[in-house]
Image (tube, rainbow, N blue to C red; front, top):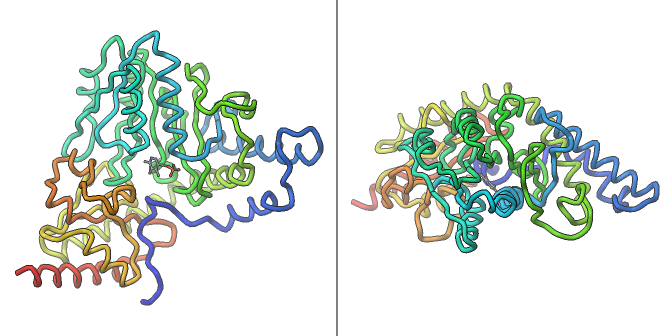
Length: 384
Ligand SMILES: *Cc1c(COP(=O)(O)O)cnc(C)c1O
């Protein structure tokens, strides 16, 4: 096999044909500024409102609860800082976990420098948040809980239903970074009715980069984050990214429609890959929960080996994978997520993340596992 094998879908995805087709007219033909008052502007404006409708349908929520942003990072920053500043009269305490994406962790760190107190919850060995521990961490000063629906490194899925219900009972706003969960888990908001805010990113769901969504449940107290013009009902300024908005809406419609079918296919492939690795390669072990796990995540530790070496060798064979999280690649520090689930720095160094997606086949998995076996054997032989 000489072609490239892409197993880094948690880092980003390709643009689907259907999404490209939807976006095309807005790249050149219809470029009107949606804020204008002419026919040309109205075409863009209408496209945005149609997109909002599509997203609301896919998420089972109201149109007016959907806001378009510049991506997952902005959605998380807006949710966390916006809620914190809008509710600081009620309290200054925020709860999150030690395994959040950096766009959540560093937004919280920023708030700590501005008078807020943040609790970073430990997680269990399988990456799950203990609802009991969360309950204990809550005080009458707690205004916000932010916990990702599913982790981007080890794929652990949290009990969002229970967590959000607990927050609701305590009158605490709940935000979830659902960026890895969308399209892989059914996140319909009629099922998760106590979620106040939810973040989505276009490029993780076969849509464009640089576009995101923040769902804000009606009545949620939140301040604006980007100030300027009166776009998005005056709540998120800046000339709208019309083709991005049209693209993410189409991507949302498709992934939410296909979630069940894809779940069956990906779960089979993931379990096949995990099974084959554990059988073929000695001293290998899976990081994170086996049961509460995203259907496309294979995070595996090869004891006694360094991930940099494995990744470089995989790359030479045309295989794209990732060490822990793409944001961490190239840095010496081991992943904060692996550390939080009790993986030693040495073991974390031998950990590689493969994430599967639309184009992944069984044949690709067989190829990757055979190459992996070769690499791991070679490294282990060399080190004795
Ligand atoms: C990718 C990702 C983000 C950041 O989204 P961008 O659109 O790349 O800014 C945030 N959280 C999680 C869990 C992610 O996987």
